[in-house]
Length: 178
Length: 154
View 1 (tube, rainbow over the protein chains, first blue to last red):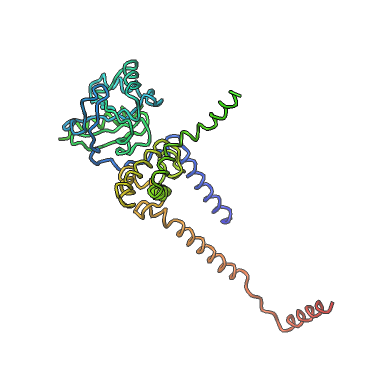
View 2: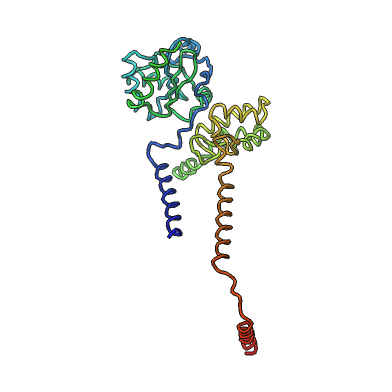
């Protein structure tokens, strides 16, 4: 009897393991970021609407903010756009955008027609700052605390669900921190 | 004739789009060789089963550019891989370091081998017990010998 039960148990365990790994919410592309709880990488980039003016993460010291990397050519970013628009109207947390490997004219045209949820945008035409932030594609969104430390990273589209379940509660918590 | 020419030119398009990296190779084969050697051991984050050296993803191209520039700036191989690990984690390494969470990866196969050897050893010992050597009586021995001899003669 044992000689049948043991292989069956091993088979079922393996099948269960493979089944769990196949589940939709387990995306192998979601690589855990080593940047969580580290200082947001510094940069000093020209702003999209006023290229003469620069922006650096240091400018946001003392505030909790979202850093959203996007591009006008990115299809998923358009999916995310209404969520960011609704968030910006609530006035709970400023969203700074980084226009990743894009043409300024395209980005400005998209924000003019689709609406602009950002307090400001910086441009990273060569994608160098994207590499510093360890992104593998756009959109990606970072939650950065008052001391300029990255506390959370959303890989891919910010959905209403992960906004309300994860990002906004974290922002409220970080607002309480000194 | 014109159509043929256009078709021939279209055929050249994919080559033209690679001219960017071909130029890098022509300009500095030493840097390029070191970059490829380094990048072969790094994972492309977009198409995860490809190495950074062979991937055509845009991010991989940017990362190769980054590696190239750091080689030119005189950085050591270790400094360059550390730079990438700081941004993308150990996941970029095809040769991951031994850490608490990679113990299973490194030693799991050996543990399985040991388990297999253990099971095999146990089974062989059990079999020896269940099939005891039969002790033949002197008479049976003779009969067996006679039968074997008979066989030989035929």
